Image 1 (cartoon, one colour):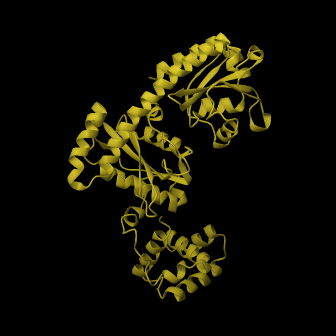
Image 2 (cartoon, rainbow, N blue to C red):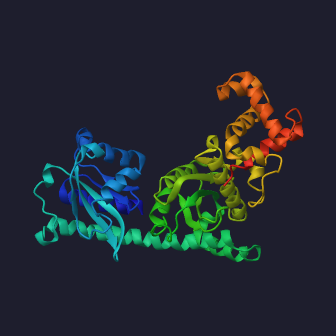
Image 3 (cartoon, one colour):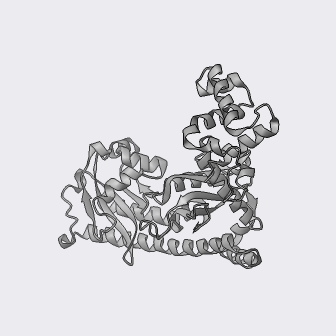
Length: 401
């Protein structure tokens, strides 16, 4: 399918004799065409286009700037002026890619001297514009077909992840049929949380389809109500070359974290890769736990992997409605936030006072004073191993969402 998109983009580039770029509606790069030789490629690019090509996506700020011109509602080409302050050194002509009234992406033309006299208004009836829009419509049909296929696989994935134990065999069989040979290969599950669904702020259709087909993602779905606060997370089932080569899953997580549907700030988690679908629900539970841990512990994120969670592998498995231990609860009150941070860092440093004081940037005597205050508030003895373990785990668990 990627080759078809490239061919169609090249057709549009040839029609106008200028570079063309195809992005999905979330501004993820699908294909691009260069015009002229390699020597003048650099001259035709500005920072926004360079980033789009090299990093396969545009920033949220760039997306908002272009959408301010009404491209998401446009049914005909739009001319957008340059704005060096926004990193847009060259103007653009945007060809909306639509199918049956739904925008699926955009074709961008660099508006250089060759197009200075081009009238993009429909009433101008320029045959080049009409031909390019016909090609854009063909692209829209392809993207729409991918969206439908992706939506069907996403529904099958959601059915399996949310099925009761007694219904998992049937859901697993349906997903296996939908995935074909990929169902028996090495797979990884990624969770991105939180995730805005169709009902949230008009988020629209979930990523599906075009993104999945081009990034090794076998299926995507939003799973409602799977986070402690009742919000949704996104599940991505990613094809791997080998169980020991999770790079495609990491790349997919990185791109999904930059989606406008990812809640801010979002985090991602990845379960242990498995072969086949037999343990897919376990992999999802691991991925979701890892995403929660990444949100709680900055050093783990923005993408945390189950194998590297340490104590959070246990803590994320505790009941979500648990109450903090009564002894530690006073330390969790807002006025004592600095004491809690000090205690956790001291315990993270295995009780090494000098190391903890250095990390915290305080004098060792200050550290000892704060630890004595912790003992007074909690009634715990920091020379007692079990008391230290209780305090350490409770402090870490308190940050889990």
